[in-house]
Length: 357
Image (cartoon, rainbow, N blue to C red; front, side, top):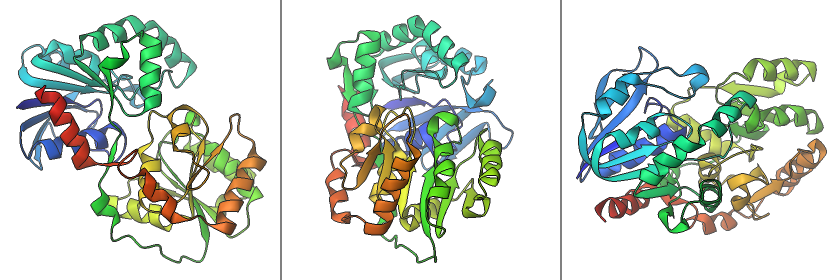
C-alpha cells in the first residue's frame, strides 16, 4: 500500500504527535510505501528527508505558540496527490482538516482530541471551528481514539456513531526499557515530563515542593512559555535550588530519567491518553495524576494514584510522601501491558488491518 501520514508538527520531536506518527510510520514502512507530510517551522529541519524507510516532506507553516500549523503549501500539494491510504493526525491543528483534499481509497483520522482549546482565545476558536471539524470527521472512513475517554468525548461532542470510532492506545517500545536500572543519586525525585503550559499543571509541583522533605528534588523535563514563571515562583518559595530543568534530552537520557525517578506527577486538566504515564509505568515508576479526562483511566491506587481538581496542595504532598516513604509493588504495573500499554509493533499491526479493510 501507498500510505500518507499527515503530521501537524515537524516529525522530529521526541514527544507528542510526532512521536506517535514516527513510531507507526517506521514500522509500517517495513512492509509498505510510507510518506509523511509534516511542517517546517525552522530552518534546522530539512525540506526532504529519508529516515528509517520513511519519506518525509516538510512544508512551511504559520504556527503561533506552536499551534494551528497552517500551511498553504501543504494544502495545495494535497490537492494534487493520490495514495491508497491517507491518515491524518491531530484534530487541534489544521493539517488533519486538509487531509481529505488528497485522493485516496481510505481516509483515517486519529484525533488526539481534548474537547477544549487550551487558552480562552483558543477555546473560542475551537467552538467556532466545530462545523469544520464535524465535516472532516464525517469524511473519515475510520476515526481512531487513543482512549475510551477520547472516544466518549468524540461521540458526545460530534454526535458520531460509536461504531465509527475505534480505540487504539498509543504504544511503547518495550525493548527500550529492558536494560534500564535505577541509579542511586543521593536524593529522592519527583519527575515531570511534558510541555511547560499552565493546563499541564506543572506549576502545582513547584508550589508543593516546600511541603516535601529537603532531600526531594523536582525534575522538570520540557520546554514552553511557562518556564519563566516557574523559575520566578521557585525563587519566591526559596526552592529554586531543589528544581532541575532539562530540555531537548536525547531519548536514552529521558528513559533513564523515568527509571531514576521515585514518582512521576502529571496534574494536567486534559489528556487524551498520556504517553508520559505509559512510559513511566513501563520503566517501573509509580505515577500521580489528576483524576480527570483520560488520566482517570490510569488510576488504580496501586501503581497510579489520583488527586482531584481543583488541586489541594496538602493532598498532593500527602500522596507524594506516601509513595516516597512506602514505595509500591512494581508487580502491579505489569497488568497495564497488553491492555492499556501496547507495543508500537502491535499498534502498527492494528492500523495495517484497518487500512486493508
